[in-house]
Image (cartoon, rainbow, N blue to C red):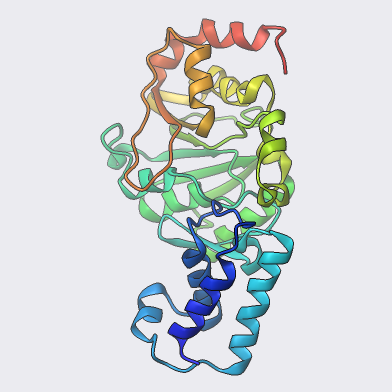
Length: 302
């Protein structure tokens, strides 16, 4: 069997209506390619260029076993393979952290333009880091930056440390165990965060694949807004004078706008898909502090 034939066979197997594609993939073809990348130890271009090459029976058996595990368990493919790509880089991944899939990857590749001149950015905080993919990608794409990556989960930080080691950025990327900004003791030019923003009700309706991920990384109260708004309230204290916050709230963007109609949110448009990332200067955050505090003090905690 050729590599191309195996790819097509895997696509057929994975084109099942019971599978949900959204964890760093968009369809069965993406997942089939992930399997070949892992087993053949090649990148996409190499696999496409060698599609007529024969694959061994052992590799075929291993590929089919992976596909069947995906179908039977509904585990995200990235967890099964133990790796995922983000912002053009490879990361270790397992159930200690969410599968990296943030559109912030596109922002990193584009240098956070037009909001930020990354040449002027030296200190960055990746808050609610999970696997560390956002902060480590920033460190790799902008080698003059020093990056702290923070999370409440010790398990997630242990995974993130393996990615720091993988990319050999130990001198410039440091982990911080912290409940949001509680244990952070410095300010930054840039804070980037993809925090929990899913309500309990929304979580119950999500496809089975999400149930393999740590619930701590997904759910928050007040219709999915409690943690994002808490970050909006606390962030100015941890931003340098000309600092910026990039906050992802995903599909909770409409809820956030409806909750704060007075705020002129700056939402980022993405060419590669994704939504719900807004940007604030420190000045803007300070201007709206009253509204954030009022929301967090409300009794409408769901």
